[in-house]
View 1 (cartoon, rainbow, N blue to C red):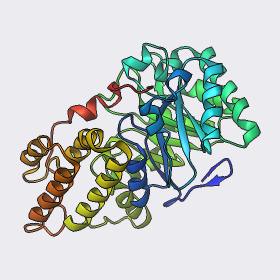
View 2: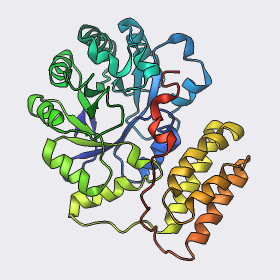
View 3: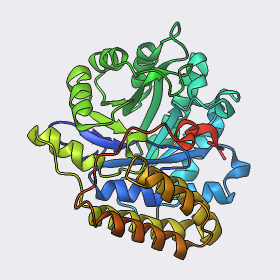
Length: 356
C-alpha cells in the first residue's frame, strides 16, 4: 500500500493502522503498537493555533524522537491559512505525512467547527484541504484525511466529500463508520465506507468497531478497504495488531501472549511513558493505560483501585510487574478478559483538550 512515496506493510492485502486518539496515541503508545504488528501510526491531534505550538501538551504530541517512519502528524483547525501554516510548521519538525482531522466528534472541537463539524460546511472543508495540499506539495509530503460518514443520519455526505477531496489531491482517506451525532455510541456501519472505496482510486481505510481478528476479516471483505484502522480495541491490548495480522494471513487464531510477555511489553511502555511525561504527570497519565490492561482480568479491578493510590513511577511499574507475576502463577497465557463496562476514559476519549 502506498501513501505518496511511502510503502506500508500489508497482511493479506491490507495494512493495519493505529487510530489517532487524543490522550492515548502518544509516541510511547505508537511505538509499542508498531512493535506489535501495526504498520502505521498517526500522531494525536495537533492544533493549528500558533499560540499553542509551544505549549507543553503540543510539544509532547509533536515529539517523534526515535520513531520509525513515515512520521504522520494529524492537524486540526477551522481556518485554511492557519491549517496550511500548521502543516508547514510540522513538516519543518519532521512530519513526512500530514493528516487532516475531520473525524473528532468532541463538542470542545465541534463547537469551534473543527473536527467532524467541518463536514457540515463543505466549502470550508474543501478550502482547508486545498490549502494544506498546496502547502505540502512542494515538499513532497502527502496529505491524508480522516472523517466520519457525515454529521448525522440525515446528513451522510462522506461520499460527496470524498470525491472532492480526492480531486483536490488527498492521497488517502480514512472513514469512521459513524456520524458525528453518534459519537462512539451505537454500531459502526460499513456501507458508506464500501461506497467510498468503490468510487475512489486513492487508498481508503476502514475504521470503527474493529475489535477482533474475525471482525477485521469481515470488515475487510465487506468494504474492500485498503487498510484497517484500530482504535479503542488497542487500549490495553496493543498485541491485537499481531493477532489480526496472523488471522488475515492464515485464517487461524494466534495464541494469546503469555502473561510474562504482556508484563514485559506493558512495563517497557510505562518506562517510555515516564520518560516523555516526567514523574508526576507520567504517573497520572499512565493510570488509564494500566486500567485498560487489567480490565476484565481476574483481580484486575481490585488492582486498578490500588494502583490509583500510588504516587511514584517506581511504585507504579513495580506494582504492575508484581501483579502480573502473581497472575502468572495461575495462568501461563493471558486469560480471556471478562466483559466489562466501558471505562470512562474510553467513552470520553476526545473530551480532553483535543486541539491544545
